[in-house]
Length: 238
Image 1 (cartoon, one colour):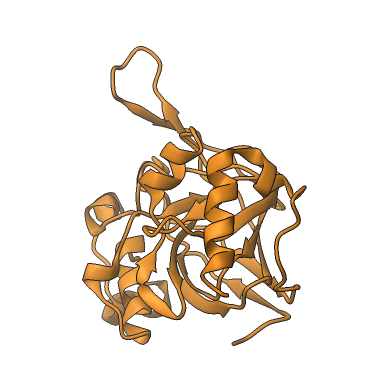
Image 2 (cartoon, rainbow, N blue to C red; image 1 turned 180 degrees about the vertical axis):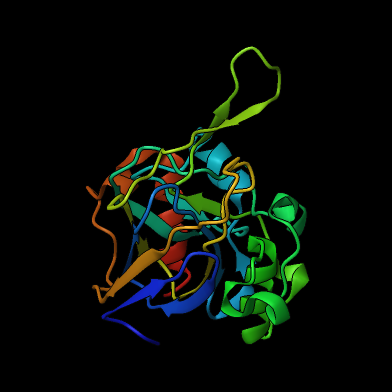
């Protein structure tokens, strides 16, 4: 496990870390329209992973915002969103795919070296392989710093909000179990920007107390479903 450090993830790159229960991960946008597309797994059993549909449905929200908890497919809280400068983080669009980059023209390592343009899917897969995981382990992600809302006047259409996140915007997560965190900083799949210029993201990891969550913790009191997910995570450690 690694704790108590800072790491800057360049734009258009991938990164992963293990996060001990009780520790916090603070992500900070280092440029406009930064995106951190994140996958979450229980470190002890990566077969248990973030379930975005259940997370949204159980907490009656179409976005991620404090003090929601990020729930696993077993109904346990993987992490709590304990703070953010933004009130909206996208969890309904999913990660970008290679076709989203077609407008930038061809790119490969032989041509562009470290400037190779890659989708979040490609980056996430490479990082999953490092941990012995693969394509079947890809799941719906949270796109931190991005906002995608229903488009006015267009049924079932989504509208990306350019400029929603600027330099210095942040979000903080508290691990409720030991976690494997995998993230990519490729542009959002609905970002219409004509130029490839993904912003970097800063990650600050800080150690925390792994004890029980207090009854008056905002994530505990947010909704009954949030409290049950936190209690389920706690019980699994007894």
